[in-house]
Length: 251
Image 1: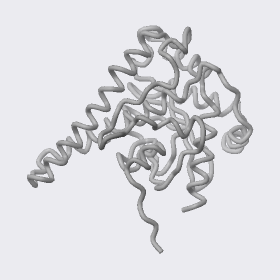
Image 2: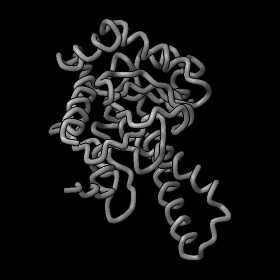
Image 3: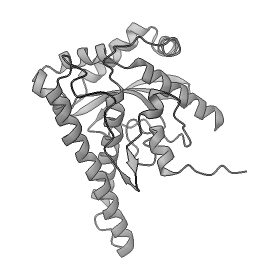
Image 4: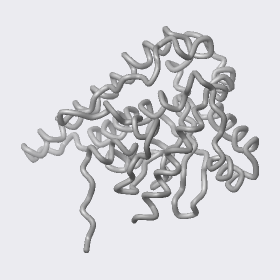
């Protein structure tokens, strides 16, 4: 018996980019169900009423002070992230109009905008949950996966920081799960959607677009990344890893 495909709401809630783009953190593990707790809440508010929406932060705008300042976080969430949400909904409306008129003259630009804004929306939603004011420890399951994949937890953290700092121009650092080998990878994403490794699942992401840190850190991207590592929400990454593995086991 063939399995029915999940609804778009289910895929978005799971944190998959597979139906939005082939972005660097795109996952086409259909039916990926979020686990309980933080990971289950990550996509709450990201989609509703048949449109994509700006989700609330999981903490107050001043909760990450002094490492991440209130002004930057407020602008980043209410202006930049909101812009990707609006861009995604606008692009989908234009694609609907193109289908209705059978006019696909702008399909190349619209496809690019879909990938850019859709990936931007999901990455930012994950980014807010990738930081915690509690500075939590790395859970044992994730620690074991990091050691198996990179040799040690220290090596994994150093590679993640180095890759994130070195992302060309505007981009991201991504800790991802690769289900074929059941291992973790560290990726860079340029813009939001470039440098694809299809079918991986993003576990933890760090934004190194200048709007993410420039008001506080100016051109000191490295200092920003070092401080992000102090706020990294490892339990969130561990929950997403567990959810991804369960989804693969059921596939």
